[in-house]
Image (tube, rainbow, N blue to C red; front, side, top):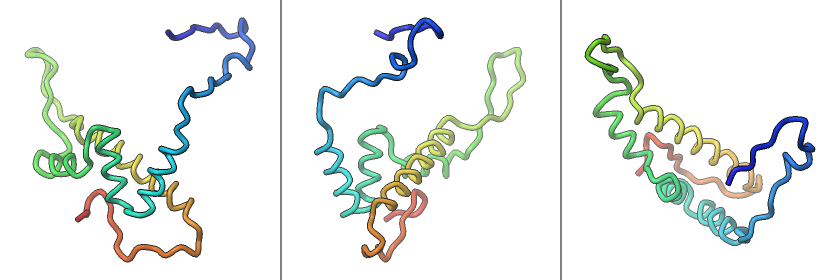
Length: 126
């Protein structure tokens, strides 16, 4: 249950205190990082699908077919208007997260490590 705290009634140390996780995930996270380092984008896309329950390429295909916007009407009394499709908004969010994760992982790779010959992004993967 979420604890409600009122400003001024609770010390900052209590507000910002973090509980220690009961499960040590260090090994799992290390395995994921090692897999992504070894298999690159293919592994990252698999983890994206596993954890986010959606695949960027499937969203990209949907956007290619159906477009970024759609006509939307709240009710019969309202005029329809164009809005961003929820799938497009989800794709942008997930792609931004993907790019952020790739940068974080790239920053972990030592400068003398070999870089892959091919570059793959969410728009052009094989």
